Image (cartoon, rainbow, N blue to C red; front, side, top):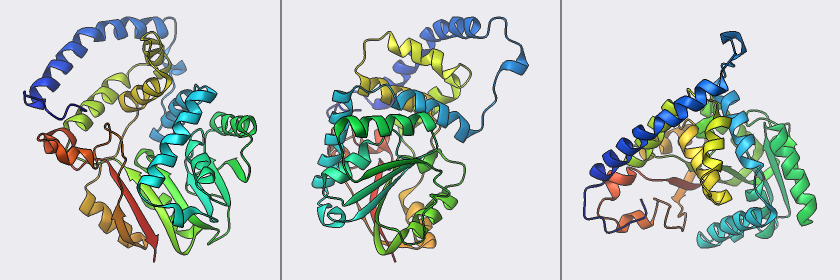
Length: 302
């Protein structure tokens, strides 16, 4: 993905990756047998997409050390600066929909926001958020257990909103986007990150998620934990290999946003080599590898 000068077609490399992965699945098969040994079908939980993601992401988000967490805050501060968004944030009331462990909310405060609220439906995630905010001594920040469908706040409460890779995991994107619209003041701005379509990267991740959905995510995570990965890499693998993504076409997505009441959109850049929304344009295999790419947008409530 990050190699911008591949000599072989990326499909060839993808096939080799899938072949090697298939050879390793026997290990996971043994794990699955151990995990369910002695259990009957009634004891195996069958979760909806949102229930599964709530358990998965709470497991992933709460493993960060203070140093790793601070590095993630700095990554989002960098992205906000890169896209020249300080004027949209400084002195403003902000809300992060589906805040996970809250790093983006901290980045908003560090970028000059007067107040930041992070909401998430994971009780363990919010408990982690509150503890680390206290540890870091961050002021004017709050975290609450709420859903992206109902923040519990009055209409037009915020100047700036964030959904950073969340709504493509929920059951009803339309309901979630309408709740953002309700919460924003007229003329308020909204940072969006969602997954694009038609990429080798996405197809491999989707296949992995379908296969690994047969195994308890905690057991898959136990395998990842043996690989000596950094916390950040461990999180990204746990996310991309186990979560279900709803992919979207940029033109169709902009049409939906217009229907929800958002306009004045501009595309944002992730700023890192692993992002496929800006640097991928320099890649001769950009279309094959990334399709429509990461979709990062700034839109306004109109």
